[in-house]
Each structure stands twice: as structure tokens, then as C-alpha cells.
Length: 294
Ligand code: ADP
Ligand code: MG
Image (tube, rainbow, N blue to C red; front, top):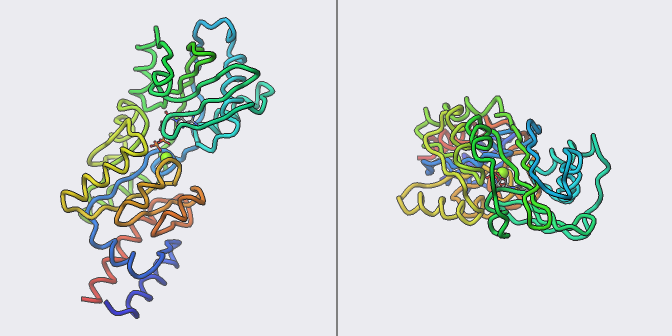
């Protein structure tokens, strides 16, 4: 590989808002055949809106306002896209408080102490991990999930208090990027910590080749290793929230713009905007560069 050709390639990519760390990353990218894409914040905007609220039967949570008070307060310190939308939603209607204690459970949700009450907000797995009994909502939740909504469960003091359904929108550039990558011979796989039904609804809409759902952050790592063991070079595209380790483990990690600082540190390639066409530019330029070199 001639250094001059690599420098030209890096420069051409930068003109399109695609920043390679160096020539090595440009060379690596042309060898990958699988693109794993994170869902929330990568294929979708990660700026969802609250669409439905289901109120459980809880002595402390008797109205929608009670529920969103606990949800907004518990999520106040989280940087997850789902958290931000629920905080904004709550702040429009109630005065939320800063939680006395807060911890985030990666890929599951948050645990916080709000006005002396232990509040859990996250996926079903989170509530189950804390031994919260889940009841009486199956058909409702099923309908939300098959229409692609993310379902957020809420428990207060160990008892289910309600459910919030959140709808995210697919980035306009996502569908075209998926089909362009497929035309370039890449296998495109969507990865997400969200539930299987929600993920499938969105995957169908995007036309990806495969979907892996219900993943913990460490499962995202394993998925990468799985494809690598099959002899495929793997490109991972993510925003760094719960997927920074996967960005590092992939042969090439691409961080979408508007992601986190963590993502930028973990990535081999950074896109300046949220637009996924940058991934296609990156692949095209790496291939064109390597053709010149050989
Ligand atoms: P993705 O893989 O789609 O980017 P994440 O790995 O960030 O999603 O999160 C996986 C799942 O964990 C989410 O779909 C959501 O159900 C739950 N979750 C994670 N963080 C939060 C949070 N702060 N509040 C509510 N739910 C959360
Ligand atoms: Mg994400």
C-alpha cells in the first residue's frame, strides 16, 4: 500500500464528512463483508416520543402524573436516548426531582431513589432481575412491540407501577444506506438490546439481512466475534451508548455523529453527522483506494 494513495483516500473521505483515524483503518474497511448496525441512535434517530402510557395498580402511583414524575426523576441523570425523551416528556407536565441515588444498568435501564422510593425504569429484563412480578399486560405490550414501539417498564419499591410505550423514527438515510451496502456485497445485520418483536418490526421496514435482538452489551461483543470466527471481517456502526466495546472489538468501528465522546474514542472512523450515507461513502472510498494500490 502506498502511503500517498492512502492519504488521498483519507482526504477524499474527509471532504464527505467521514474521518478515518489513519491509513490502516482505510485498508481494513475494504476487507470487511459484514456490517453490524446498532438500532437506537444509529438506524433510528434516538429521539423517540412517548405514545402510550399504561398505569398499573400501585398504591403510590395512581395517575399518569405520578408515573411520569417517577420516570422523569429516575431517568434525570441518564444519557440514554430513551431516558432523554422521557425526562423531556415528564418536565412538560410535572416538576421532577434529582434522584438521591442513581445507577444505570447497561443495556437494561436505570435504578434510582426518588423521594425515598426505589424506582426501576427499563426493559422487562431489568424488572425481572430485581424480582418484580410482571402481570396483566401481555396483549397490550404485544401490540406496541409489533408496531415497532419500544416498551419501558416502571417499578416503584419492587412493585410494577406502569409501562410507557415509546416510538422512535427511522433515519431517512437508513433505508438507502442499507440497500447501498447490500449492493456493495455487504451483509447488513441490525443489533439491539430492544425486544425481538420491536426489533423485527423495524428490521422489516429497513430491509436488513438479519436481526439480533434482546442483546446485552456483552452479547454485542459476542455477535462480532461470531462473524469474525466465520472468517468475515466485521464493521460495526454505533453511537457509543452501550456499544463502545463492540466498536472497539470490530475490525472497523464507525461512530455516527451526535453520538458520545466515548464513541469517538472507541471508533476507527467518525462520521460528522447522523446521516448513514457516510458509511456507504467510507466503504466506497476504501475500495477505490485499495484498487489503486494493488
Ligand atoms: P440499542 O441496542 O437499541 O441501542 P441499548 O443497548 O442502548 O439499545 O438498550 C437496550 C434496551 O435497554 C433498550 O431498548 C431499553 O429497553 C433498555 N434501556 C437501556 N437504557 C435505558 C434507560 N435509561 N431507560 C429505559 N430503558 C433503557
Ligand atoms: Mg444504541
